[in-house]
Amino acid sequence: MPAFSDARRRAIGYPASRFDAPTFPDLSTRAERERLSPSALRAFFAIAERWKLRDDEARELLGGVSSSAYYDWKKKPDRMLEVDRLTRVSYLIGIYKALHILYGDTLADEWVRLPNRNAVFAGRTPLDYMVAGGLLAMQTVRKLLDARRGGV
Image 1: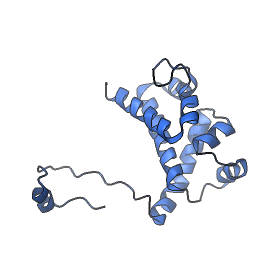
Image 2 (image 1 turned 30 degrees about the vertical axis):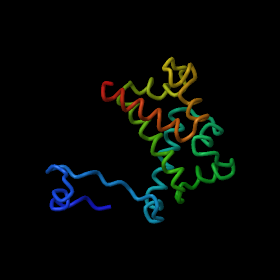
Image 3 (image 1 turned 135 degrees about the horizontal axis):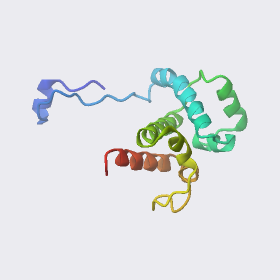
């Protein structure tokens, strides 16, 4: 979706700004999913290695992928993912990035496996929380870490 022109902004009452609203990838288009999927899968597998995920944990974070599909994707990541899986990987990349901004590399990579006293996790590890809660749990963890990055 293109950014609004200055005339359009004035017509709908938006204040003048030198910043354009961010444009997001349109995941409803096949071309965009084909473009993003291979790099998303490669990033996911790199994160899975850094977090020392077991295959069953990684498959669940991807939305319950079968073993055969998971190993095939790992061998040949040049494929197209569905919107749900791209969104999951996007959250995980954001979580990984936020952790590496907040903490040193060692703690950042161990954090998902450490029991957490935050009320969100109720003593569980963030990984257990995300595996059990799926996409919405990943979104919550991402928001939590982004808030911590912002000093909240």
